[in-house]
Length: 448
Image (tube, rainbow, N blue to C red; front, side, top):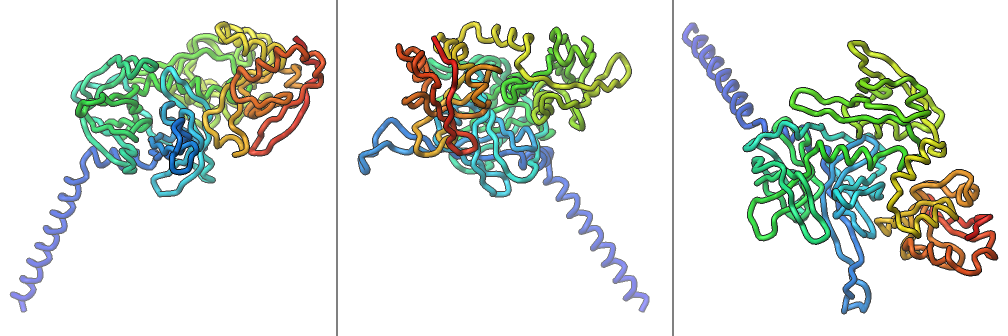
């Protein structure tokens, strides 16, 4: 009996040793790279697009449809996603697939051709996981990095490499050049564009943007610190909501700190009225933590003009709450800043602004208008008390017709506004698409 008990005891010890070995083996397999991918993978999306090619499909004697692919990164739980501008350029439709396999139609919110970045949005009906944001300020040569993307259509492909070089200037073609890129030997393929470059903490340190044609394992990414500065403009509440705050800020990002510092406030702006001071560090807007200008803009996106929201700032060594009330963009301070920003705009845009009170931009996706239309011009600004403003044209509307002409290019509007009979056309008829519906209207007092 005693020997039997001894055998059972030895078996128990042996089993516990085996269990311990299994745990250790599992821990060995779950490397820092595996943990990084686990942390970030739910915030990576696959983008599928369709556009009409200029080439004709000989089988059907008509325009040929071309499928495209890319990758995106969730930057806001409400469905805002960053990708490359070339991924969404001139597409007819966009479809986004999340990590769980669910698929949603996407619309283009804003884009930056020069820096090859765009923001698109999906309405998923649920909060989306936001990508952990790192900094590119402390990247080291030889540091391990990870690329995740829709490589050749193979969704959520993970590749590993190192930082091969920093501050690369690259000419992609005669129309596109990049400055200060990260070079990596992590495999980046067609379809990876717009996807994340991660560090071993699972943080976003770059947006994959290009590869060297004909080379092996030479890829490039936009440093995240640069990308976030451009994103602040793409998410600007002045551009997207026709509201403004009047804060002039600067991102401070180093290996040891990330903070958003107020450098100044615009005269007579909401920020000046609220009492913000130069040197204040914005740490929170409402319940959202703030580390840079992109955070500030997205935190204020849903705040309408006239509604107060509390901002927390670090002033000297104390936390101070400042109540900010956003204003519409129709006051003098904002008009002056807009005039400076539009100093080099084409003459036809100046005429459109002067006569109609509209600032327009070509739509990026045919999916933004019903299939009966060949295109349209998105309203990106409306001047209060202008003919368009008084006709209830809103930012985000898509102008599809003016008088008896379709409006696909800015030149189409210019043509109507230079018609000799324009003074006799009052009121001037127009058609806009809003939320998928075509709305007719008239503008009064339009004259040359």
